[in-house]
Length: 94
Image 1 (cartoon, rainbow, N blue to C red):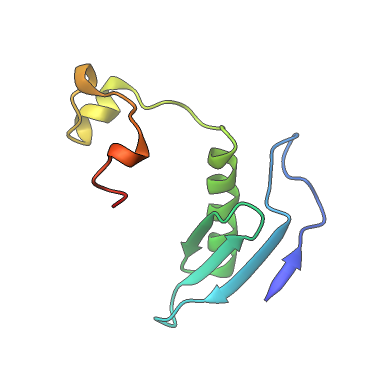
Image 2: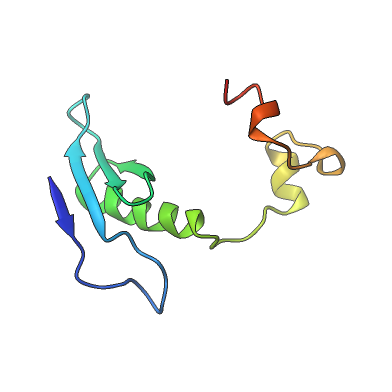
């Protein structure tokens, strides 16, 4: 199911315009995808999936705050060693 949103989002924010929304394979999770960026999100309801997609697309376009040192430590990341690197050098994206 694809649809076009009829507004541009909150206060100049970037919201998905061309989306698909479907029920996941488990039959309990809704999956929303921004067809223009490829960003996908999910939620237990259609409304939650779409709300999560709005947040994910905003992040894709640069919205949001950088994590604090406390946030990094909570995730087991040493802030002193936290460096951005190339995706090509990452084992995560193999």
